[in-house]
Image (cartoon, rainbow, N blue to C red; front, side, top):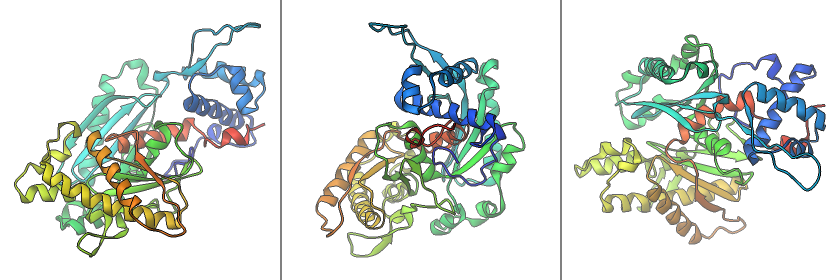
Length: 409
């Protein structure tokens, strides 16, 4: 586990990538320390890196030369001071490494390829009425081949892995939807990560889809974010994530912060699970009842045109239910910040956040400090980007708190 991303089926790290007592392990850890620091703070000169990491100037010079030779760092323009030699800031090389990220959704499969900076370079997607293991494995194989065909030859050996964002216990959600269980019953007994990994020479990782989206916020989002926060991702089903001390906490089963399962009071006085109130599937069902084009909410969000009345009703219910879920959560886990993201247009997300704040302001909870609620910074690609961050974190990053803990010596 690196950068707090704890995943099921994580392949064992090679000896050179482990923090250990041997010289190769120590060097690998310190190289990751430098890469993590530059990712968080941007281009830095070796003197500043030495100061922040407590590594010697000579050690930092050796590390940065090695990372530059490996194509992971690039030199910036020299900065001249009043005295001494000019400093040369080093930044991450966009083409230093590439990462596949696959999102398995209830209505759509997405495969992306990101560069070392987290920029999406290529993407492939298909719509599906019901995701099946066979269909997902076949999609992954074809999507990887299609993307590799577009990648320059010199970049293909820089693929560092594939991450998969997958709803855990997907068959249980199907029972709730009353889908045809025969279509997805096989998910109980299939390990698609192992099947895909057997076909390619890079490691494959799996993470719960909502936790994966939270991981994207942690790795690629605003680096000035708080150390602890609760996270909501509103997709076909709403889900959650939890970051504590700058690390993604997923729990022993990978389902920590399963906010969608939380019971919440509704406007009619009934108690329901949050997933039944604040999910996009609920909005889709409301659109279908009035013969509106409910399928459009599984297309790219920037093309949505939702009748205002239907949207307003969903926003009202979702915001109230999420506010109750937030209060219940902070009674157990003391966090001061909540981030809300989702598969939706930015304007819709902004309005949802605004309404959650209004509901929170009107709730009285003695002895508990209400958290600040704000929008996430990733958007609809959060689950796929979070998936891509799994191999990146495993191979190239350390936890942010390691900057304060000091280097391996």
